[in-house]
Length: 149
Image 1 (cartoon, rainbow, N blue to C red):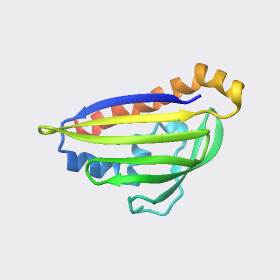
Image 2: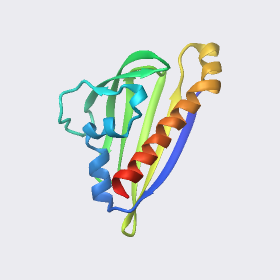
Image 3: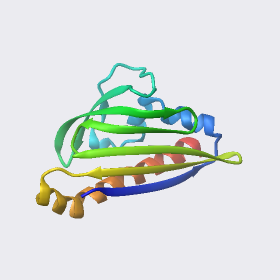
Image 4: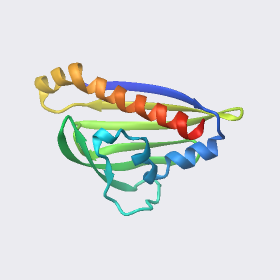
């Protein structure tokens, strides 16, 4: 079963600056909770563009995973989409959008995901996975507020 998570955050900085931060793969470690032990395996810097592949190591619920994403689309200063090719989810598609709001930027995230393991995975999704996704984005929100004011 596909599930969707959406989040928005207003950042008091110009879109070009906010987009530059999010399109730099090295910054992913800064906005990811330490408990996930997130590590980028792809040599940096990563040229962000449609077709780019990025490999990570991450721990979810205590289990280590190799996560590979494909940058499916990349529209400078506007949006990009990353899709999981290998990782803990059956599917994962994350749309990052950036919209001018005067001197501020509205960031909109939409994550469409499916969990593996059939009915057992659905039970886990209902009890744990959604909460973990929410926790990751809440952490990211807090860090972005600290970094950008």
